[in-house]
Image (cartoon, rainbow, N blue to C red; front, side):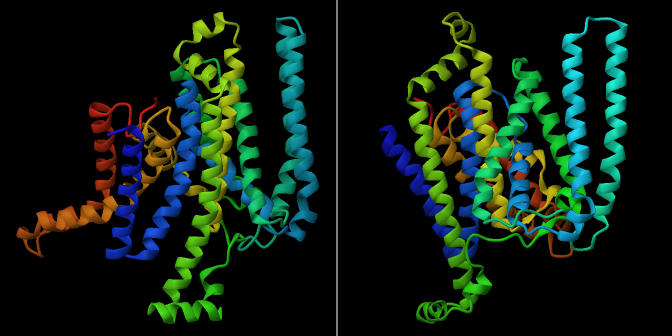
Length: 434
């Protein structure tokens, strides 16, 4: 079987499995799995750019995804006038003082001669900057968070169309990646992994604790949607007529239409990214990146600036992850910093890339779709298998009740087992790099 036919068969098998979910479980569930699978495929595509193109081991995917989600709040939510009047100026001034302090410390460290005088001057600049920052920043933040804390307590956003937040999320993630890359790129791969993981945890901690920015752990809900909600569609005459002609409840039809509209938007974004990624991979730039990945020493000997190229691809891949993060928050219509965990937004994305095929864009997309499908379906399948395996124990068995209650953890076992099996029997993935 040729590679192209094999690829078509693999994608057809995925959509066949999705059709079976729609037939035997719920059409709405199938569309939900598809939408989250498309977003996961975009994340996997971004990680594949970093690892598959350049061999960069980024374990900070969670942080860049969270930054993309934050952009949706800052761009699309309406501003909170009382909070803006209460503390916007003080907050902005405090942040500028903090940035100026760091900049001044860097300049001082570079220009002064090593010695005690440099250490004393650096210490004085940092202490003075910290005190000035606290003087303006803390009262302003307290004033903002005191404005209707049950529903607001933050500055809000710009009130712009929500679709504009998707590219802004990519820009935010790219900016964060540039700062991270300037600090950590050039480190050995294991140190790079530790640095990116630590910085991503810092980003999530900021989202959880800085309530003036996006309400912290109180979450931001009711984000604007780029498509009509099921409730709005339910009022449309043509939707009611369509539901009657199909013989289905209007609530189900309206939910399917809303999910289908999201799927259309996500497919457009994924298609555009996939086309651009293929063009880049097969260009001289793509061949250069793979040459750097395969042998950095030889690439340096040929005059290539390896660190600069690593920074380029690190920023590019992180921007794609930020875009996916903005799309996911838009789909959920809420920002919940507590949901950003390494298991979901780092480990699972890496499994998608490895299983799909590192270095192959189509493989990353297939891995994203397939692994998310398994992640969702393994839990009900595990409960069914556990029910069948323990039915002989009787309904009143404490052991059976314990096993049934823990059947949800089958997804962790299944993902780990799937990864081990693919690494053993198909280490290059379902669609390997050519």
